[in-house]
Length: 233
Ligand code: HEM
Image (cartoon, rainbow, N blue to C red; front, side):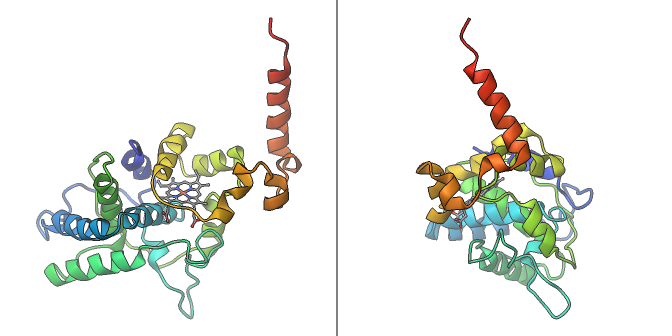
């Protein structure tokens, strides 16, 4: 599961990051994040899934810059209420707040929330028996968020394969990365409304989408059909 998680999301770093950035200022950062994540995942394993998904939704909008964590203000429209994140679908914000508070009390004004979320997501994967990878640090927190990109860039439950692939390609990620990262769905939960259309084979009726009306999907469907209908030699 998630073998390429770290490698893939390295593409999405906001700027070039380092491995040893906190060594002189707060070497305990990795231990502190790990301990906090251990407590949260031990108390409820679902907490691991919240942080992993939060990291994904952060990285797909302007890179891994913590923009997903920003609340709406008078002059900032955050990403939390974008169609892909709303209705309480994204969780884990409080966990990141708690870790940030803990780190602030140990080493004030040093960490970016983007780094904290990235390290916490790696630890979440380890704590549910996934693989380890080193996390480069020194991400800068974004002061802006992008509601429109959050609605456009993140794949949706009813999206066709080609749409999902193109959203990953747009991020500089390959089809292999997409398949590996989708391994994140071996844990966690989804609301019934997000998958019932696919399992009961009434996708058109229940989702309001007709895959054949999307010209790209239609081309794929018909060429696939043509190939599979070829008589066996
Ligand atoms: C490939 C395209 C993807 C699509 C279409 C997609 C879509 C979804 C949807 C619809 C849900 C259920 C949300 C809900 O009902 O509240 C979900 C859950 C989840 N997704 Fe994805 N996702 C994708 C890729 C990813 C990636 C790349 C990751 C992380 C590497 C990820 C991590 C998760 C996790 C951990 C959950 C479970 C969250 C929970 O338990 O609350 N997903 N995803």
